[in-house]
Amino acid sequence: MESLRSLQVHDADYHNARTWAYIYNAGPEVDEVLQAAAGHVLLENALNPFVFPSLREMQRDIVAIVNDLLHGDEGTGGTTTSGGTESIFMGVKTARDRMRAEKGIEKGRVIVPRTAHPAFAKSAHYLDLEWVQMPLGDDLRTHAGALEGMITDDTVLIVGSAPNFPYGMIDPIPEMARIAMERGIPFHVDACLGGLMLPFLERLGYEIPPWDFRVPGVTSISADLHKYGYAIKGASVILHRPKTNLQYQVFQFDNWPGGLYGTQAFLGTKPAAPIGACWAVLHYLGEEGYLRLARETMEATERLIEGVRAMDSVHVWGQPDMCVFAIGSYDHDILAVGDILNERGWHFDRQEGPPALHLMVSPRHRLVVDEFLTDLRYALNHHAAASTKAATYGDDVSAEVSAKQES
Image (cartoon, rainbow, N blue to C red; front, side):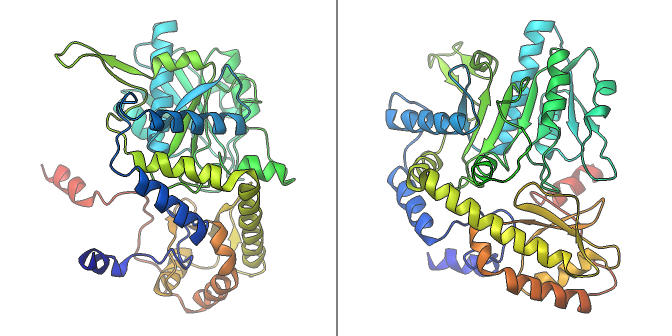
């Protein structure tokens, strides 16, 4: 353990809320629940529900809770997955196979906003689908008017985000879903980011644009539990309407000596720790706990945005609908500003087109709002002319890409 801890010496300090990405910290009490629950089922495997039926019941309960939050009903159903990417992949795969069965489309098209998560591009690549992006308006929003002209006879899926990752804005889901429904095309809402936050903001009185199963034409939704559900990493849900569409998601195979092999989503072996921890934190927090955390998170977000907007030379891009936003500047190299903030121990994602520092606010950030704003003011006055750091998100694949280019 000493060697393990020594490897972490340069890791980001999320315990003290210095990270604005990757970690959604609800506090030490929740951490204790997560660790206890994960440890209790640590060595179990959800591959076979007949061996560990408790894991099956936990997953069913998780899906039922999320389905209720997103205004699904008895005709809506889904499964747990290992994260947003798997949920998105299963949503795309289900639409592809459904359109292949119902319309005979062998190789289809997926239409997504420019701000949609890269997991849609990855899914289209793996599933051999054409992938096209809707343009953004000058307001950095997706506009439904652009959609109609992009639909082809082989379109198998249209996507909207609630909210999008780059700017925290919800796409025009009712308008997009209506167009999809009129053309007989599945419509997926990617709520991996907002699925466990937006329902509680609405209950707190925030004006949230329509986006869930109350919207006609929405056929599937992805929602991560390991973001604002505060579970440990590896917990998400994919929901389908009608739930009979799950027939296009599941996989079965029996042409080998081992008997019938089946999976509800992509993974075979499924770690039990994320399932147990997710189930435990949902029941530990309950509605009251999630409302409290949503309130704390939005109060911190509002203080941060107000503080940024009070500075003359920086701004927030767009009009965020929840606790995710991007800081930009017309007067400074904002990425160079980010370099100074990095030196002061802050960690966040960087964006381009337009350049921005990307912040995802969690409950613990309420403790560091003033400190961050103070450091931002300092960075605006002490940064270099330009940053040498690129905007990146995800794994470091530079060595593999270099090897591919050289071959």
